[in-house]
Length: 134
Image (cartoon, rainbow, N blue to C red; front, side):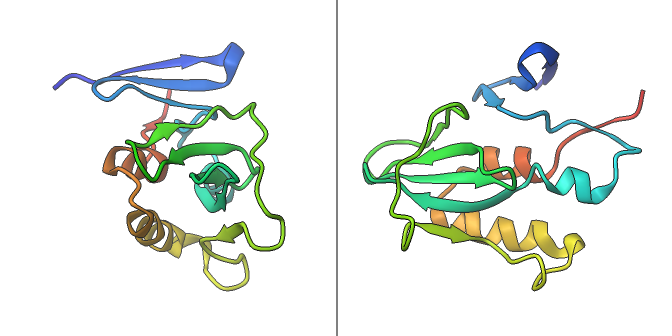
């Protein structure tokens, strides 16, 4: 299978042109010189229990990444849409900065996403971005 990678800088998006089509709201390709801590800002960070019944995975910048619906397949989230959730009980994090070293976070995040039922294509694309060196 051939995977085509398109970077659309005006929208700060990356598109993987392969089934299923994956469009993430932030660039997950990284120059090899980009520090690990900066790349880690693009990892999934937690999940919101939205008021409409879905779970929404978000990144370190609190941008929605993935919708996990109770009655239909997962969909990519629109990063420009505000997600309504109960501020007291509807926000959960996969890790806390002081508890998990940056090099161990992908394993912790992978486990949490699998428990939530996130699809493998999302987990792999968000935790194992291709590295661009030129």
